[in-house]
Length: 69
Image 1 (cartoon, helix red, strand yellow):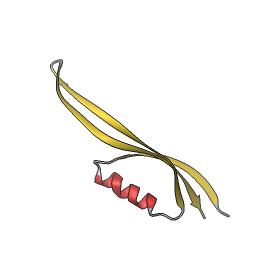
Image 2 (tube, rainbow, N blue to C red):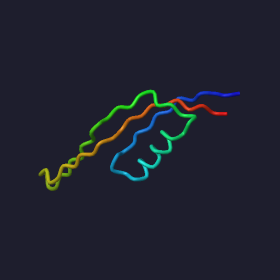
Image 3 (spheres, helix red, strand yellow):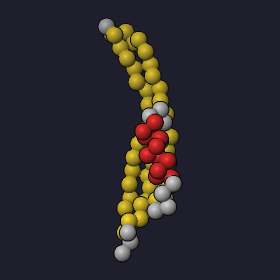
């Protein structure tokens, strides 16, 4: 019997491990992406009340269906 499971995950594009997992997902014939959103995360670093650094990174929010045997 084949069942379908809905899944969700956040993939950070600057993290090689996340991108490897994403590649495994898109190359898996049992998985079908149903929605993919692109978001930008912003990290602000403060020292003594002053903004010292701002870091931005792109993330993918991915929803998919996975068939399980």
